[in-house]
Length: 389
Image (cartoon, rainbow, N blue to C red; front, top):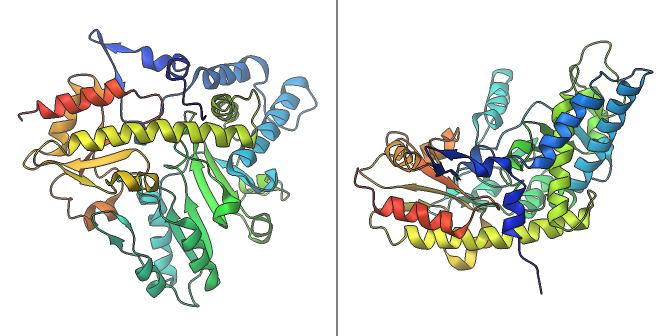
């Protein structure tokens, strides 16, 4: 029989979960904006500062330790993404979800160079990709398709295999933004058959550290913008300047923490897959509880997939509106009881515009992580049911 998440053990590994404000315990449901970090991340980061704080390429001990660390983290990241080689892993300061302005603005900037940018529509109210519209938008002139692995607003998970097939059928590259999916399920670049994928560990219990996967042949073929002294060999040719070594150490701690949920003391792919299976089962039960409770409150509208039989096609991020109450008022009410949730457009301006929620202040977003509990979900529902504006 499958083993579920050991919630007591998990929560004991996150020091921030012990925080109290005005004597009340904090409930973190702002996880889509960034998760809390495990003690392993803290320990790895401080260990770096204590024992190997030096730049790369030196002939001395601390520099050699930094070199070894970065190699180890690159291997662990390749395992996490199921890449074929550590040479397909590039590090950078951060990444964002597809629906963030970051993952739209760079493509729109290319319009000034004569590039045509098209948006694929979604199906409402499920907020899933309209595959018929995708097929309609694709032509032999399409060069790149950018898609999210999971919406940071409504939680919907696209059928990436189908998107990949459609993109590659016309000769386009597939770019996947997996930032929001990272803490909720296993990322597998080989199964997706993507050409590029980005994610950031601040969403999966680590530091603010960006990761790029790129097919090795493409990383070697394309030309990076870099300073002249920088190497022209391997993935580091894409990394500008000195990397944030202490964050990379923390990133290793995040991978090690996830592997530990799968019963391993090293970063192994089977352990990561088992960990994510346990996490998904726990989170699915919580999001089902949340959605069921929200549907009992008259006037609340939930955006995204809500059917119990379809919850495997979403992550546990729930956005709602409750007219005439504005999302900010709901968020402030929850915050006054030390329940942290976010409101607004969540930097997903295209989606919020499509849902016609700009003038209404966006949505209230409740984001579950695997360290959340059923009692915390019940508290949110109780507080919302008692809100009178």
